[in-house]
Length: 136
Image (cartoon, rainbow, N blue to C red; front, side):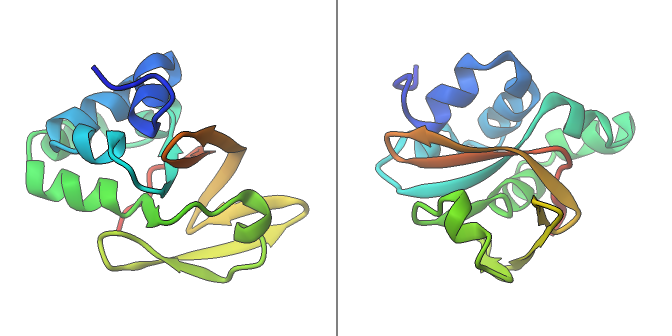
């Protein structure tokens, strides 16, 4: 069971992240997100996962390697706060690909996803909640 104040613990204890939790577990990333980090995670909610057609989501959840690649596209090494994110134009994710970062009207966009809640602090990093699953 993850410690409750790590990124994995926060995800495990928030019902809005039950799909993300299942995906993290299926990809074998729980220990990573429970580890020392620090990490910045752009965490899609259940509503974000619901935007993916069910057949596509089921296929992804049943392909651990592809799932891991998608999930690691949501993680940036280091603790990057919202104020720091707003001054960036891109960030390199743990899977090696870059996400684009833009701001418009006070909203922060990561690729095509909007950050809906920023700076959820964890003992091993920070979570920024997003409304769309990022696809590498």
